[in-house]
Length: 229
Ligand SMILES: [Zn+2]
Image (cartoon, rainbow, N blue to C red):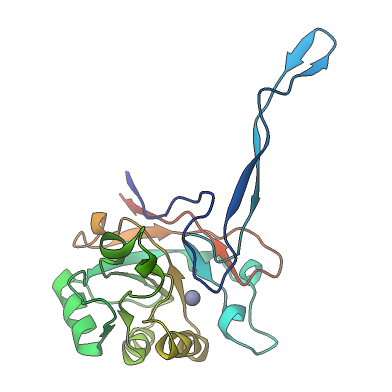
């Protein structure tokens, strides 16, 4: 079995969406602190971490974008939603800031030789990390899906889709509408995925991206992986 890691590293001041608080990681204690019990001298190292529930590679819970009181929090979403079949479409030549149309997305799906099955996860390689990661523009200039393309994915019966950028659609109104479309259609999405180049064009795989059990969480960091068996 081959495991491909699709997650971004989390570290002090990880690039995040500008609307969310930063990741803060500090050393809580380290091996310079000795604890003595009887004849035994012990030392340990641990970190203290504060982060947004939208930090790093993460999945949005319905309550993030759905104002209805019964919208699910991340700890309420069934775990089987995060262990699915998946494939990755290659749209890395999409220009920055562009909203991928239904026609462009359909063509990218056809190019994989796959057809979308109910509950599939569809990963969208837009080359965002390659073009923007590490630059201030990473938070603003990314391409994404058009609202019609999100509805088309929902029409095919997907459970979720995932992108490399901090948002599923280009910044501003489109991004708001993209989240509202997910609420309307009962699907969700992952943001800040990494390494999609390693799975694009390789057909189907098993996707696993389990969230933390955050009580009332509106999202959660995930360790997203592709399994080829
Ligand atoms: Zn989102």
